[in-house]
Image (cartoon, rainbow, N blue to C red; front, side):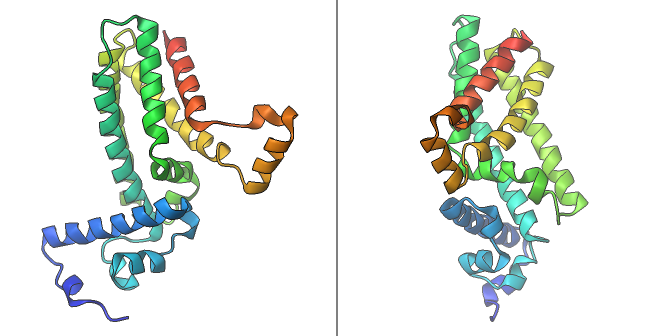
Length: 223
C-alpha cells in the first residue's frame, strides 16, 4: 500500500499531533463499534485512519500503545465530567446525601464511557504488555495526576474525608471498574444461564448500580 504524501510530510510538531489524533480517533471508532480490544488490529486501525500500517508505527510502538493512549484520553475526558458533576453538588446538603451524590455521579459518568471501561478492564492483562517502560510510566504518572485532581474535587463536596481518603476511594474504585465491567458483560451463553436459572440471581451484575453501591459503601466506611 502506498503511503500518502501528506503523511510523509508530517514532520512539524503540529502535524505529528494531528496524525496522532487521527489514529486515536480511528481506534475510538473501532472500539465503539465492537468494544473488543482483542479484535482491534493495527491493519484495521490503519485502514480506518486512512494510512499505511507502517505509518502507524511512526507514532505508536504497538497496538497496545495505541489503546493505552486512547485510554488516557478517555480517562482525562471522564475526569473532567466528574469534576463538573461534583461542583454541582449542594455543599449545604446533609453528609449522607452528599456521599450518595458523589457515588451516583461517579457511577453514572463511568457507565456512560464504555470504551474507557472496556480498556480499563484489560489494562493489567493486555495493555500493559508489549508496551515500553516509557509508555507505561507516562500513563501511570498521568493517572496519578488525574486522581489527585479528582480527589481534590471530591473533598470539596465531602470535606469530612481527607484528601488521602478520597484518593484511596478512587484507587479502590478503579479496581471495581476493572473487575465489575467484565462481570456485567458475560458471554452470551452465561447470560442465558443467568436469565433461565433464578437461583443464580446473585451472579447477575448491573454495572452502574453495583459501582454506585460499592463506592457509597466504601465512602461511608471511611468515615
